[in-house]
Image 1 (tube, one colour):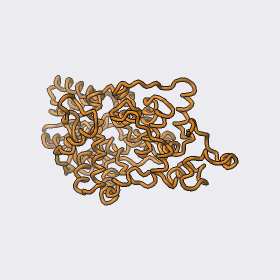
Image 2 (cartoon, rainbow, N blue to C red):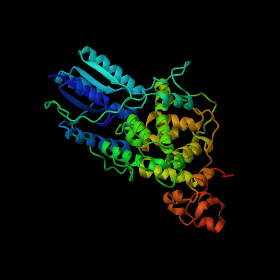
Image 3 (cartoon, rainbow, N blue to C red):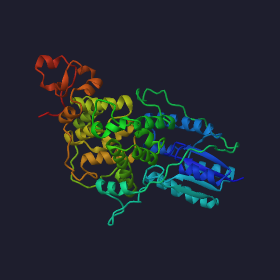
Image 4 (cartoon, one colour):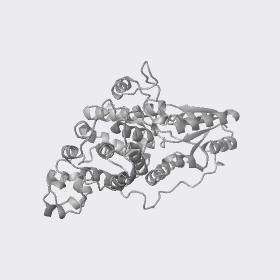
Length: 444
């Protein structure tokens, strides 16, 4: 009886899963394997919010496999060593895995291939599992990747995507393969209070609800801070609980300006993955070397702490930072505003901001997080490197009545309308009645 192993990484689902389908087509039994690798934690994954969301995803994946007669096998240790142990125990002929985009994933894949070749087992790395279009498929004539989004988007939009796969009907797992317990969500105080529930079931439900109507208004309303006008699918895409390729297919089937705008955002995700795959050093180093003088020392450290804690004195900045702390998520417009404030107004290194975001964001993705920070800071792929986002203008434009600010800054609840965006304009006595800090930098 033949056996294959499916190594789950950033693809925690049973729908539209090419490695799982290939393994089931080629073997009588399959070991669905996930490895909790301490090296992944050391690389920066072990943030409480992501660990809690991961636990939800693994539990949901185990339930989905169980409904098909299978189960998830969880191991703890070095990924390559644990895969090898399972291969040797089951005498597996093949291992299937989603091709990774990061330097870490690439190194792991190379180690795995070398080890398996020595054991007479073949490794199949499947493309278009983590992204809709794999990195390296679309390249300009004079480079190994696209450095500007718009020409990439034109090529990406014309690319034919693979057809999404149905979930399997049955999964047979060798009964002798042991598993560690499925991790449970942490009750730690470090987990954000408003963190959403993880897992494919939640993600597919959210995708279906989003495409049933709300997406239609996305083109006009996606920058609005007040309503819930975005899909909030980013955590599910990051963990692979929702397939990017399937999301594109279903959005295109819905059609309309809103769906088109949503698909464009999915393309941004692929764009940054292909940049990082070609330039892995951009995870920590400037993508474009531009003369930037970052502030250092005690004053800069104090300003950074104020920014992290949502007490910069700029209401829309502070509101967004408090949303991040509470939900482990922030609206994309808020990410642009807060990143611009840190790098442009406070002249603090983008890496400091990116590090704080990765510590809290449930969708904390190295490609999208680091390269978005660089885009805002002027060291990344933006063709207008001096672009800034004025916090007052942005607040007035995207939260015109101050509803978003007052939601997250209850100390300013007594300020009506758009006046909440400039509390420093209040007269002395009125100003003193609000327990809110003075601006870190002169609003003028």
